[in-house]
Image 1 (cartoon, rainbow, N blue to C red):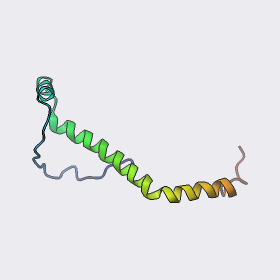
Image 2: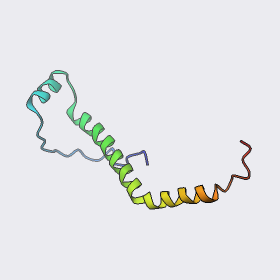
Image 3: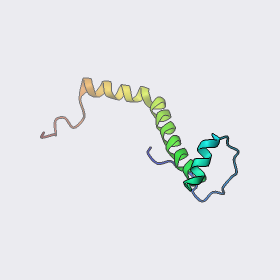
Image 4: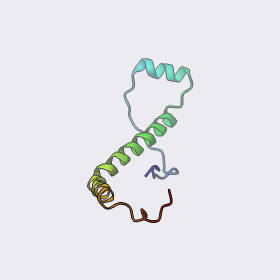
Length: 82
C-alpha cells in the first residue's frame, strides 16, 4: 500500500500549468527542476490519496475485524507467553 505503482520508463507528456510568476522566477533562479519536483510531489499525493481510498473502501471490514478481536480475542491469545 505504500508503493505508488507507475511505469517509470513511460514517455514524458507535456502539460500546461499555471504557476505564480514570482514563485516560478525564484525556482528558476535556484535551478529547481520543475518537472522532477512535480513528479516527486505527485508520487506523494497519489500515495496519500490511494491510502485514503483504501481505508475508505475497507473501513467496514477493519471495524468488523476490530470488533471480533475485542470480543473474541486473537487466535494466538492462548499461545503467547508475554
